[in-house]
Length: 176
Image (tube, rainbow, N blue to C red; front, side):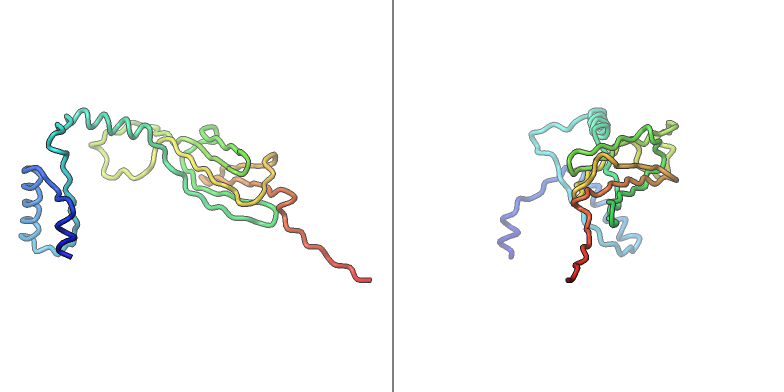
């Protein structure tokens, strides 16, 4: 087992990162806090210069603007329909788009902020704001011409009718 550890590449860290790690360990010892914590330190290769903070923030903002949240759904079937439900609080019906292609239903939308709040004024920031989407494959044949969607009390309900051939029909056997 010692041989395995020796064969793995060693992590390198800058002196500043090592000082921060040592300071945090001293604080934990001083407070007699029993906390299990995994710390992973990764440093950029020595040959690559560090990006300025402004460039890092700009890259972060660009990445966030390209990010699209994934919508959580419930999907179940009844005798005649497949039902897709999702909680979509704060989204207006005109800010949503539902499309069907073959057996795939795609729900897209945007949750827009109504006010601008400074990052420094937040205590918590857990809500997702921005574009979101979700595509699901419906595992039965569907009648895409008669799909209905309703948004009520922040809950989106999409009713996808099963195709006639997908519905289970019980046949009574006649005797002679």
